Image 1 (cartoon, rainbow, N blue to C red):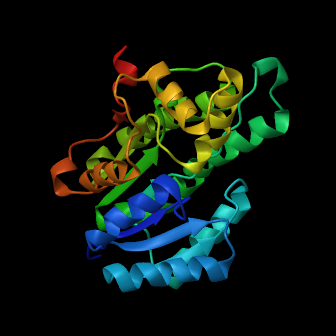
Image 2: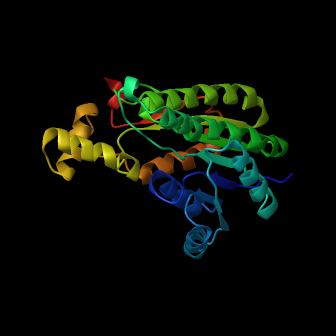
Length: 260
């Protein structure tokens, strides 16, 4: 099988996932975009990528909290455009609460989207990668895959688990031309953090923008957000031949958060 480069990026209609998609498209990598938006909206986004970057791009709409839906999604991709050889498990959700008050349904949903979905996409994508002797699995974990914060039991459990699963995947595939790595962003100005910014603003009786800076300074010495585009550049590097021996790692891009 000749080598192809086609990337599936889950949660790629906004935030980090969208930025990753743009960086890969600039490098000429064909895309499978994913989200919860209606098909017509996703198709427009895919067409915009094609016009802007000249790559082939399609959109799949799927609720990846459901295992059966993921199977259907991967079958749809295979039949529509062919196998995926770059898999970026980026989709994630968040909820914060003390552990004794943490809603059970939120726990289940966060584990399903942030961890189990990556297992299902990986197990279904690996055979084609192995068949062509090349593949890249890049899981967007978090600084919370390396350290913990209060009120984030489910998120930390999922992101720590994602790192463990990635290590196992890397060990199993290292001799088959397929790498598996995690990227661990710190504070990134994306929709996922909006409610945390609002809560910080209420708690400290401050404005929304001041709350953003307050949260950053509470954890990281770098005085600004991590750019989603920079995360995209790191993904692109991990897809390059220069990264062929990098596997099983967890790379912080966190402004020094985990240097404490």
